[in-house]
Amino acid sequence: MQQMQHKGKSIRPFIGSKEFDISRRFYSDLGFKETILTDTMSVFHSGTLSFYLQDAYVKDWIDNTMVFMEVDDLERFYQELVALDLPSKYKTVKVKSVRHLDWGNECFVHDPSGILWHFGEFK
Image 1 (cartoon, helix red, strand yellow):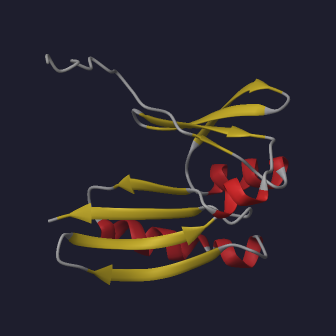
Image 2: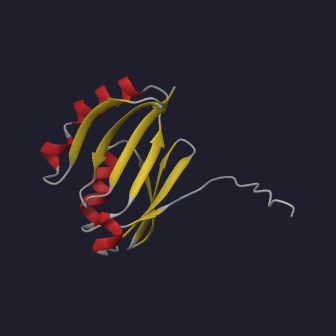
């Protein structure tokens, strides 16, 4: 059987939000650039990476959503992240410190809805 050859140009996950406007502000504060698509959906960009944020909340979906974003220098990224002091601006946001693992390093951020972001750097 011949394998399918993906010639993809990007991949954009769709994530939900409990309070859309709060999540929009959070992702802007986190350094993403927003493009509003409709009253209930925006796309957020960081360089060539993007994701869609929806004004949609399904608890089981949100509670089980995780996103991994590879960064070029996790230590620098983490210091910049801590300096943003997002937990003081958003009551449910959590920032977890860097973990050093066999494959590389990562830190974690829970967004205002509870979505878990992994920010990592491979060895």
